[in-house]
Image (cartoon, one colour):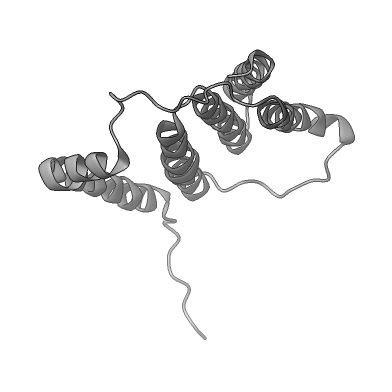
Length: 167
């Protein structure tokens, strides 16, 4: 991996994670976490591991963060939006610019790993067989846990207002 791209993505991931844990608004924290996940996926891709990078994007940046946002929006609906000041957009723009600069450095300089993946890496077909043929009960258990979490978030976030009578 290009050393410049690695340091750009590493710095971007570190900045996004620090911003994630210091935000008071939980939705903003989840969006900073998304920036960190994308930077980490780019580091994995640059190091010659495209399959874990794709998992990082699909599972963590896709599914898990959508679940986090679903729970946050169900339990704590956001207050009315107020107009943003320009200085409030500096930090999100910095995280986005870091990811863009790292991607450009990765593309323009090349990844450096032209020999391909080593032979001990599990191919995607073997991983699919291992997950859905050998360990299918674990996959189903996780899917039920996610279903129960979504139903629980809905149950906790419901409003207890009495129904209004029609005239």
